[in-house]
Length: 414
Image (spheres, rainbow, N blue to C red):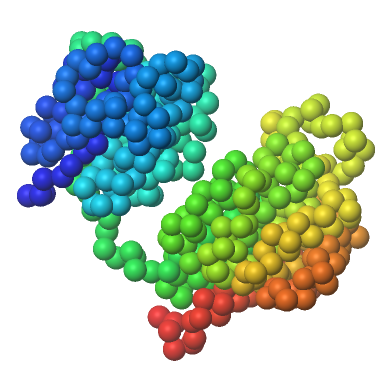
């Protein structure tokens, strides 16, 4: 039988008292404990919390009087900060095993902002009235593994709908906490790889080679928050090496593509001191939206309509040169190898392909070497290969290089 676990239950007790009590009682009926945290700001708490709203405000460096005098948005941000500080402390001390939030807009924003600061793998469930079709989930989830359940009905009283959906939330978070991760593989090293459809053959080869050496490979799509999520896991110590095979967000960030890099891109890898391989996959194009939305300054260039909402527009020599310089500048101080496949950087950029332009591709290497000339102290190596990025021989060399950089030797191979 599973030992008693402790679940955090942050809610606005001035409006969600009955619903919170219902969840607390269900958790107790399963033989577990519950810490109710009040994040309400105005009315009286409908049930007694274990951690009251005054403590949450103090954790944010303020008090409820100051919060009442400010805007509602400022209050939500402050209570979210206080909740985050409290939950991080409880989790770090081993005093909590899962967190369940229930709420509408206000409760959802505060609870999920705290959940985003908790480690990967720690059970996080949000039952939310705003988790539906038109809602953008980026601000709620960030790069974390929060599970969101749409409450269908507003969480305003207990009825045939809300009882069921709240019970599902309780069951979900308890199930997560009671289900331990499989022991096998937990001790294995892991390498993060950025990938895209146009670099998938290379990513697959890299995965096969490294998995054959007993190393897990975790792929992150280059569009959206993939690189950010990867680097958050680097910071948590869950990834021991990075192969940035498809740093698409770099050139998008420099030239107005639709998936720009987040502000700290590459710094977590440098700061962690882990091995990093940079390959210029996907740096040969800027990602725009539908063809009609391509900016005037990029019309007339080579392009590929990737799908109805994504257009790949060929990057120029100068744009790729700037990307090379930017990457090196960010990684000075890190352990880095830059590997350049001179016969093309993506599936469509190869001889005879619609995006083939080796003269423009040469801009990346030029930018890299110019930046390195300014940083002679950098532990960054640069190697050119007479291969295409998706050639198995090139991808295999990338994987083997990472294997060596991780400090492995032939005797360590399975």
